Length: 175
Image (cartoon, rainbow, N blue to C red; front, side):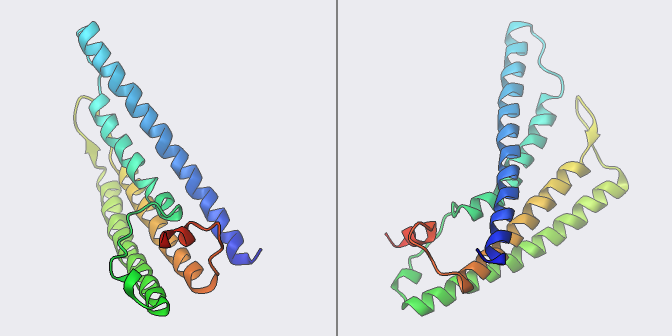
C-alpha cells in the first residue's frame, strides 16, 4: 500500500468519525423533538431551548457529513456529457471538475473561517429561550467545508495517479 493510500484511508477514518457525530446529532435531534412534542401535549410544557439546540444540531448533521459523502461517492454526479466523451477527455474533465470543486470549497472555507472568527471576536450569541454562543457552530461549518475541500484534493490525486480497481465505486459508474 502506498503512502498516499494510507493517507487516503486514514482521512476516510476521520470522515467516518465525523459521520458518527452527524448520526449521533440526528438521534439527539429526534430525541429533542419527541421530548418537546411530548412535553407540549402531555404536560403542556414544551422543552425549553429545543428549537435553538435543534438548529445547532442541524449544522452538525449537514456539515459533518459532507466530506464523508464525497469520500463514499454519494454526491449526485451528472455524466450526461462526460459519458459521451473519449475516455481520456472524460478523465481530464473529471480532474478539472474536482480541482474546481477543491478551489471553490477552499474559498468557501476561507469565507466560513472569517465568518466564524468574527462571531467569536464579537461574542455572538443565539437569543431565544436559551442563550448560547454561536461561534462553535460556525466553526463546525468551517471545519465541514474544509474537510470537503481536502477530500476533493485527495480525490483529484487518486483520479490522476491511482488505477481504478474492480471493487472501487468509481468503476461501477459506467453501468
